[in-house]
Length: 150
Ligand code: 4NP
Image 1 (cartoon, helix red, strand yellow):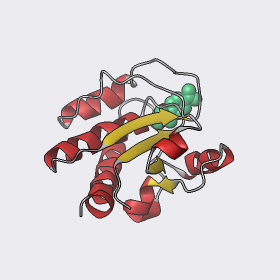
Image 2: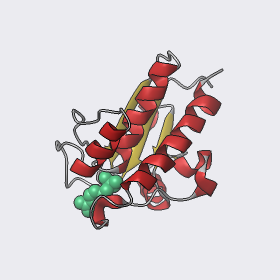
Image 3: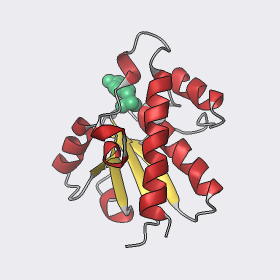
């Protein structure tokens, strides 16, 4: 199956999945790929909000601008409208299955020893966001190279 669309899903859609969306768009541009990339959350607390300031900051430090993204709730229709539905941790994958997604993947399937991308919402300040960025970058790059290219 040729992958033409990907949605990244975390809990709030304000910390991790916006970075995954921004980073995937960066690689798609680098590789000149025509592909739809979005992100969403399984929780509704932050719908319509911009990403959290520390995610915007770590993105900016790496040349990825996510500041214009706005949080949205994942929709059941997304499961048929996107070729790949990718959770950032095991809880996201579990929640996606509960919502009826038949074949969610986990970002850790593509690197970082299968680890969860830790939820930085409860981090004490900015520390740790660099690790989150690095994990997402590694896995998203592998995902694009292994699943989308060729
Ligand atoms: P995210 O982080 O899933 O990476 O966007 C969170 C953001 C908000 C909440 C939890 C996690 N929250 O409970 O509001």
